[in-house]
Image (cartoon, rainbow, N blue to C red; front, side, top):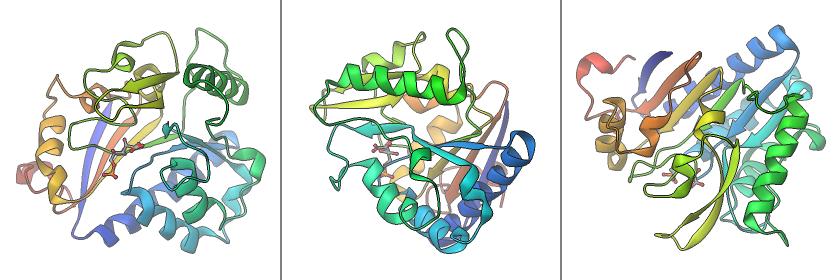
Length: 248
Ligand code: 6PG
């Protein structure tokens, strides 16, 4: 695994670099195997990236060859403002010419969480044409970082942290009293490229601990064994890292 830490002065500059990295990864994958398969992250941080991508790449020819999944999803309707799909759709996917059939959202209406996770895993395997026990290899998985060290919906002290034989699971997060559907470590760690996109002073201590490999934090379990792990940080989120770890 190759690890890099890229720090940008501001959140806006961070979004710009993240958009450049996204487009570069897309061109590499499309040149290499004709398709770019990417998993988008949720929460608030990626909003600026998605809006930047919508503005800068709406005319790009890549979108005919991009297939979008979600590294996790809240168990809410797709038109809920809490939905990660809704965030991506409103800020990016409705503003670029990606074929609708290439956007794969988690079913979250009138289906139990575990059935939704199973259906999503089956769809993933079908799209990648990868059967058990092989693991689909995403070209890029975007992840955020929570202040408790969670990533995707791999929260501390939850069942999903221990899953090694599934790609996608339903995960009850008791501290939020809610179900989530999330990628598991085997799927994340099979990726060609994983990007942690993190901004703000509030995440700085957690960034330092995860970059240092603190074993008790879910995000520390992300290590794309034969891929690249990139930390894309603004100065505030990188502020607790030693100077030597902050490459700009
Ligand atoms: C989610 C995300 C989650 C998120 C972190 C950071 O569904 O909430 O997938 O893992 O990336 O909680 O969220 P913010 O970007 O809002 O700080």
